[in-house]
Image (cartoon, rainbow, N blue to C red; front, side, top):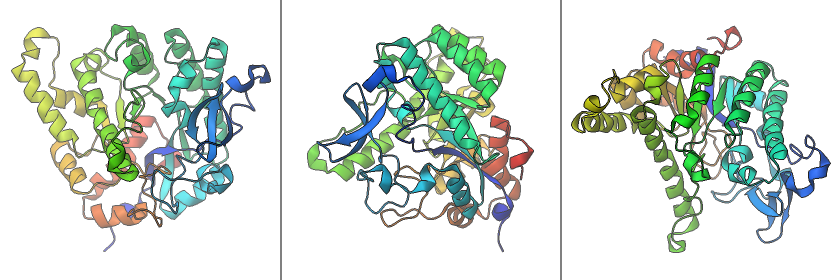
Length: 395
């Protein structure tokens, strides 16, 4: 007998829109010339890529891997080779309908993984213009399929006052959360736990905007790492898992840095990192917390790390089976979210160069026997509550 999954209007909490080549050149004054993020042919690598001031950022097709015919890191070489479902909102909505997905939470590619290039720009007006242009684009893009997409805002995090102003602006535009780097120190900024960031945490708490930590949003030294003798595919697999586990450090900092304590009504999300490892990480944090005497040093901290997590931190899964069940058993279902990572290389997207199955098939086969209440929470209710998604996406 089929489970309740087919009746739930699933909220997919981590997807990406492949940015069109004219995203920034069509929105930023032409006076900035090649300082504006733009796309051109890269002769050395034989593909179209993003460039800023002559410096290469990322390949246009690198994030557009759902259903692609080659294993990563190989990807579409030209914009014209990319399936429109990855950049056309109406086509995306039709694709979602095939799998029973009502809404998708949107994250960037270029503005997320190549933030260092924006930080290196000499002109502050251009820096801010790039961030604003992307945030505007995300809302415009979603307007082609009303009620289906949930915008997450990028921030000019190198400038705290500009960050606070942009948070106010995007909240009025309709963004439901903010994206923040896991490791601001990697950009020469104060560490994540530095009180420098307290005004931002306070503003996010007041606005009811969850803070989302997407993997690979900090130190990207792992990108392209690995000995050549390993092989490019083996190195790519190792890199991905290393990025997933990087969010354990983020969770530890949120708790041990007192951020959760100081901002008890602020929610945080560990994005694209899975959840099976979280029970162990929290066991380790509780153990260290007790055995290092944290309560003596900080008597004001009223909860254990695992309790802070259960109060205000969420994790997202997409390919796991036993790990998710273990996390539900240990943590309960209230802070676990479902994602597909569409259309990234390891997304839940069937194709000739992947073992992935369709999201609806995966969910039914792997979790169809879970209690209805649990399924509704992890597939819809938790995300709806977290991001303030209303009746338009209700199950």
